[in-house]
Image 1: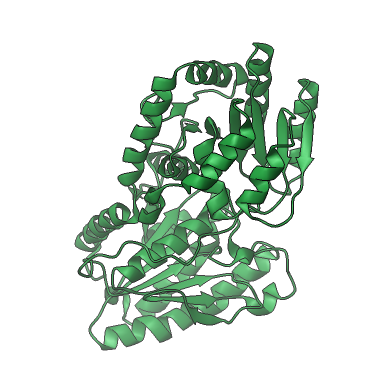
Image 2: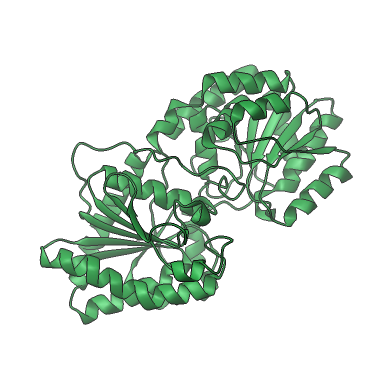
Length: 445
């Protein structure tokens, strides 16, 4: 999933409070979210961590009692508050202590522990007390790792005659692990949802109908990037066309297309360069190998701290076509970089939703996306959209963009207006209506 920032070593979301609504929504007061990822750096590996953390905080700000279960940092407390209405429930800590890399380290062992311990705890400590008080619970399970847990929760609820007190959703953010899911059992246990029409069609391939409930972004991202830091980056760029690409080193992210496009631009006389922040994946060697094959020098840049001002100062002394930033980037730095660059290459070949593109729009930047799950992207209206993985396609679009200041202004303006329509307020409104539909169809059975 939207954001690859955490994978690439970018700071996770700060502890902001999302926009609150004046009254509680039509959703149940009690909400449990089940996810492998979460807000801890240990558990913030990809877009899923961003999604569930922001969703939990938005629901908490709207007046709900939200319990976020995830495979958290074993050095942190098993349970603690995380802003208004949200309680973090770090699971598998005793296993994570022996697997320090991240939440997916020791994945199979952790899934087994979740399946054996979480369903019973959730039913006993959340559902049963709510039912005794005449209240309902919404359970939202995320991704394949939580599929069996959802099935087991449904079984326990029926055994205890509590199923009528619960609405249960299982959400697909990606196709990973689809081959490991008992789809018949899962479809019986929970209503299936997806983050985009693209993912809905992927589910249809395995014979599973799904409801689409899109992701959102925090409303305060619409304040844009720090204008002073943006100006510092623009000064550092020295008037040269500058591109940016942040994400995992993964073939699905079309890194080779980005490298080839940069080479095509420079071969046509455009002195462009690209700032890169990737992860630790071995595919990075393939990416930089391609750059060298295309005659692009790569300079690996390490600087002290994660401060954006230091990065801007350091960039003034780098002139290579490909600048590999290896330092940690905080959110303010990332958003200022998005706004300052001529284009941000979120050009994935396979993207379930594409949060990065929306974040670029909110920051005031120009997003270049692929054409799978990024349904918010309207080609040459609010974004540049690539239909292929051909570097020549991307280069052609970038060449036209760089030569058309009016188009640049239009894309930035329209992108911001698009981002305003994809805040969590809008996503939760969609969630309310889909939950109402699920309850009307399945009743209290």
